[in-house]
Structure formats: structure tokens, C-alpha cells
Image 1 (cartoon, rainbow, N blue to C red):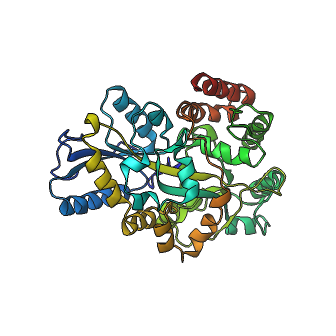
Image 2 (tube, rainbow, N blue to C red):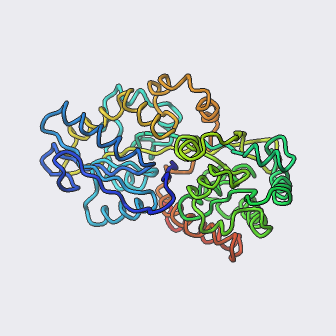
Image 3 (tube, rainbow, N blue to C red):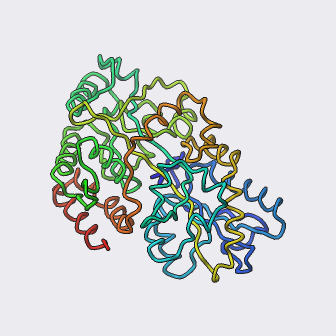
Length: 416
């Protein structure tokens, strides 16, 4: 998540390093009881959550120590790449892709990493996206689904009574907002490096496109995808989005929406928790299916982030890794993380704990038919990086077809 994701505050995005336990070092100790855990930063609540959890784990398991490092999504890919290249990989990693590590024989399988009780608690659709060549290596940790958010006050001022269902309505509604409501951006379109691949995928899947075709072959430069990126370019050039979508990250438009400055956008389940409620709890907004080209079929993006366990020191870290992961997946611990960060459950037990939440239910209902990025393909690591860096240029000054051709070439060059 995808999440690949999030910071509540817009400014000052820097790597956040936190140390737990005795407070020294950021690496595993090689003694079989000291392990290193790199976690992605989802919000300002992430670091305190893990610090408290590790404190409880160490109190219940004398002699074991977990050294924690929390890293922003903007830096975590490069951070992990550097650690792996220098043979300093962590014992446990929280990230949204795993298959290249599995391909290289670096990870414990799910049977090696967690107890049968934890393994059997994962929801079936998330088990499948955690597999590489039939074996599960990615341990689902959080999930998210995307729906369309719209500002009811802005819509009322523009004379609109319902959210758009088709792309034609998206453009027409945006034009209407631009003409009748001053001081707001009609459509939020984040195509900056933070998560442009997810934004593009949401539009593409609702035009019959996507990263791969029906046979599983890479199809990044398909005619449907070219049409999608051309449509987004047209919205941008028509002044219907915020300025410079190519340099605007998701958290920037989420913050603008929370402030009442954007009429509509593709939103995420965690928006109220992480963006709207902290700054504008009285914001009047609605949630609807993602608009599609034809206005009839509405797909949603599913996002799942994983925990993964690295084999180190000839397996000497296995007991400590398994002990800590089982502790992480305790029902009350998973539920606390989901409540803090506003994500959806990946385990049956946590799902039962959150089942009564009406807001979450409308997202949970979308998960069975959600479309996921091809994280089980080792080439996805390279495609993901290329997409983040290049997609935004297509709405600025580069031909959409040329951009997609470049990303397709990256996919083919990194395929097995």
C-alpha cells in the first residue's frame, strides 16, 4: 500500500530512524536473538506503534531484541536496494513487493516464517498475491482499496447532485466546477513519483487496460493504456486538474482535498484517518465507485503490503524471526495497527474485530473483485520504479505512447 504510501504532514519528508530496545545500532546482532526490522512509514503513528509493540515483545521474550528502522515510502526502495547490494538486508522487511527477493532465494517461505495458526488466518485472496511460483513468501500485512471521493459542497455550488460514473462525466463535471466554483481544483490527479503507478492503474483498469494482458504478458503500451494516458493528459492541458500533476504526490492532493480545495479524486480507505479528520473533520464528502470509460463497469485497485523474512546467518535468525512475526500477527496487535492507520484487514481474526465499521465495510466489499499490481513477477520491481519516474511526464511534455513504450521495454528487459 501499494502504501507504498503515506505521510500525514506534507512537509519535511525525511527518513525517520527509530531504535528500540537498548537504543543502539540498526542491525541484527548475528546472535540468533537480535534481529533488524525495517518498516515502511504510513503516518506519524507508525513509529510509536512499532516501538510499543517491540517493547511488549521484548518484555515477554527476555533475551530477544528487535532493532527497528522506520523509513518513508519515498526513500524505502533505494534504502532496501542499497542494503541488499551491500549484504546488509534486514531480518524482517515491510514493503509492497517481494518476488525478486523470493526469486533470488533470500526469503523464508510462509511455512518457515510463521506458525500454522498465523498462516491459516490469512484471507485467501491475499495468500495468492503473496506467492512466487506457487510458494507463498509475502506475508500480507495490510490492505487497501480505492474509491472515488467527491466534495459535496463543491458539487452543490457547481449544480451537481451525484458523482460521475463515466469519463465523459468526469470531464464535464470538472468543466462545470471550473466555471462555477472559484478557488478550487476540479480534479486531483497525483502523477508524481510517490505513487503515479497506482493512479495510472486505477484509470487504466477502468478502460479495459492494465499492466498485463489476459495471458499474463506485459502490455504496458497497449492501445487502451495509451488512450488512458492521453485522456489524463487532456484533462491536465484543459486546466481541469491541480497544476503540475507530474510533480504532485498523492499525499499532496489528499491534503488539498481535506482542506476543501479539490472537487473530486481517486481516494483511499485511510483518507479520513490520516488526512481529513486531523484537519477538517466537518468536511462534507461522498464516496463512490471509480469512474470508468463506459460508465458501466467499475473496477477498484487493491493494494496489499507485506512483511517478509530474510534468511540470514545460515538460518540462525529463524527462531527469532518466527517468534516476532507470530507476535505481530496476534489479533489485537493487527487490529490496533489497522485502527491507527485506517487500513483494511488481511486476516480473518482482524476482519472480525473490525466488522462493525460501516465506513470500512464499503471498501471491504470491493476487495473480492479488486485488481492488484503484478507483485508476483520479479520484473515488477523495475516496472514499478520506471512507472513512478516516467508516467507523469506524459501529461507534461512527452508523448504518452513514447512513455508507455519505455516502461514496456523495461518490463521486457527484466522478465525471466
